Image (cartoon, rainbow, N blue to C red; front, top):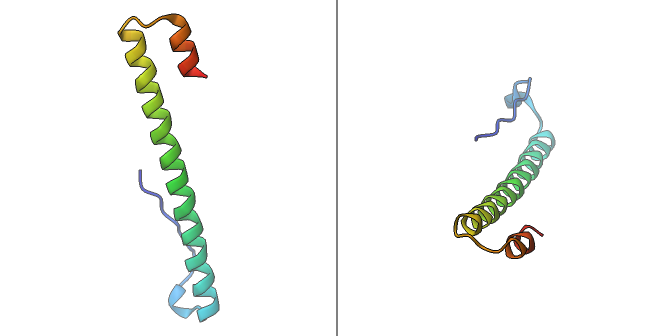
Length: 68
């Protein structure tokens, strides 16, 4: 899903320092979003692997080991 940063102001009137700060904040938000997306991708991949183990009739010990 998309993220939106809303600022209640006319940024066209802002001094360069404040615009630089806003740019820095948006970069931090982008890094956090990338981190969360990467973590979500890993969780989904691991869940898929566990599901495939269950569907293939893998031994419970193997499934438990993968869950750890």
